[in-house]
Length: 105
Image 1 (cartoon, helix red, strand yellow):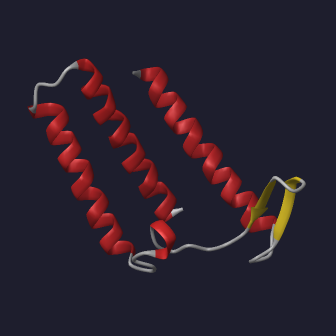
Image 2 (image 1 turned 135 degrees about the horizontal axis):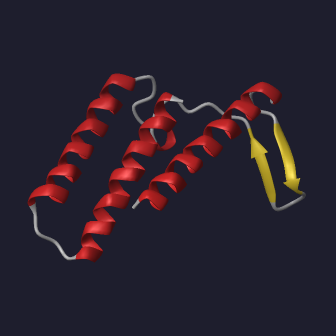
């Protein structure tokens, strides 16, 4: 479980460093080819969740995220699942927390 936590925080760190680099070195709307014709990085701003849904409503997004985390923690602690389902719930908790870092970052 500690190895998963280390990987989780390394991914968050890499994500935040990538965002910082792009915000510091790209103009809004600028696109640069990483692999010509295959992979480009384009600097865009999304202040909401999927495709701009709830744009600029950080409070609502954080309330939704908190509810999801509490529900997943309840399921993790109170319901007797197989180990496989337990791991899936833990992964969902990590992704939900990571989503929150993306919204705030």
